[in-house]
Image (cartoon, rainbow, N blue to C red; front, side):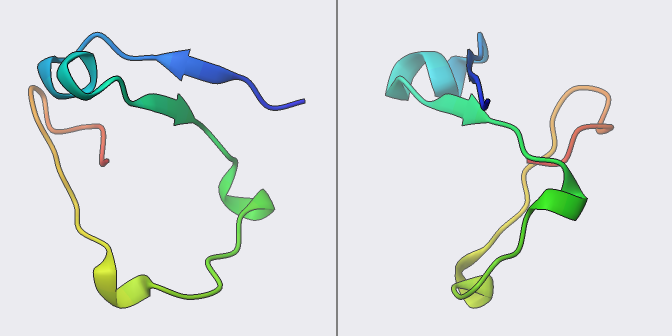
Length: 48
């Protein structure tokens, strides 16, 4: 079962955003790829 996670970064705290993490092999983006963007902060290891 999926679990929603709280994030403590300033953006998520301000907006109330919750994370639902899916494994790459369990996820298929059906449409909207042109609307995606990438955000990295801190060490730059995580790609949001």
